[in-house]
Image (cartoon, rainbow, N blue to C red; front, side):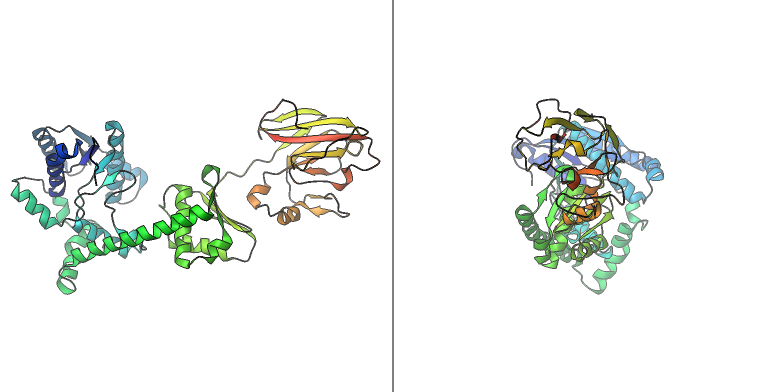
Length: 457
C-alpha cells in the first residue's frame, strides 16, 4: 500500500475513530517504512463549536505524536449556493479539492483516508441503488492512480474500535452521523439494519467481499481493454481518439461498452456526467448504416462516425468562414488560418515535374483570371473535377473521398472570377488543366505556417 523509502504521506484526520486509528497506526510504522507524515484536517464551516473542538482535538493529537498538522477551513454554504447540489456532495467535492492542494503544497505522493469495510459496504449498496454498472460496483479502491490510499478498507468498524480500546486512544463523535439527514446516513441507520435483521446478519462483510470480487473482475477487463486499444486505437492531438469500426463491432458487446467508456474517459479525462444511455447512443452510432454522422455528448465531447472509424474528440468551435483575396503570384500568408499560399508563373515550354503531393498543383495560366479568392466551402458549391465532363457538388466529392463533415469545414477552395479552380488538397477544375496547347503555367503550393523560403520543386 505504501512503499518503503521516504514517501511523504498526508493523513486525512477528522478526529473520528477511523482517522484516529489511521493516524496512530501510521505513526507506529513511520520509522519502519521510512515515512514522512503530515496530518491534515478540514473544517467544513458547519456544526459551530463542535467542529471547532474537532479541529483543536486533531491539532493536539498531532502535537502529541510530534507530527506537523495543517488545518484548512471551508466556506461550504457559500460554495453550495453558487454551485448547487446537496450539502454532502459539496462537502465531498471541496474536501478532496482541499486535500489535493495540501498534497501539492507539502510535496506528498500519498493521501491516506480512513475508509473501512463498513464504509465500503455502504458505498456499494448506494451505487447499486443509483444504477451503477460493474465498474462502479467495485466500490472505493484501496489505492488509486491519483495517490489516494485506504489502508483500513479491509477492517470493519468493530475491529477499529477494538484497536482504539487496546491502545487507550480517544476520538471525537460527529453527532450529525447519528441523524438520517442524508442518503448515506439513512442507509447506515435505517436500511442496513433492516437488511441485516431480515436477510443477512453478516451483510456488511458480504457486500465488502462483493466489492473485492468486482475489483478483481474489473482488473481483468481493464487488461483486455488496454490490450485492444494498444492494438487498434490511434491517438490524435488534443484528445482525439480513433477506433476502427469493423474491429470494434466484432468485439463482444460487453467489451464494446467498456471500450467506448474508456474512449470517453481518454478524451475527457473523466466519466463524470456520462451514463449508460450515452454508451447506448454511441453503440447506436457505431451500428448505424449511415456513413457519416456525429452526436454531441456531455463534457463538450463529440463522437463522429467517419466511414470506417469512430472518432471521439473534444467539441471544436465551428470555424469562422474565411475569405482572402489573392491579387497575383507570390507569397500570401493567411494569419487567421496560419497557412501560406505561394504562386509563380512559368514558361510552358520549359519542362516541369508534376507532383503527387496534394498541396501542390500546376494549371494553365491563361485559363485563370486574377484576382483570385481563397475562401471556405459554401452550401451548393460545384466544380468540374479534373477528368470529368460535367460538374459535381463539393459535398459529393467529400463523400466520395470519405471526408467527415467536421473536416469539410476546414477545406479551402481557390476561385477565380468565374469558378472554383482548386479544392485545396484534393482536385483542380478540369477547365484549368495543362494541355498540349498550354503556353504559360501557374504553379501553386499551399502549406501550413508562414513560410518564405524556397518553395518545393
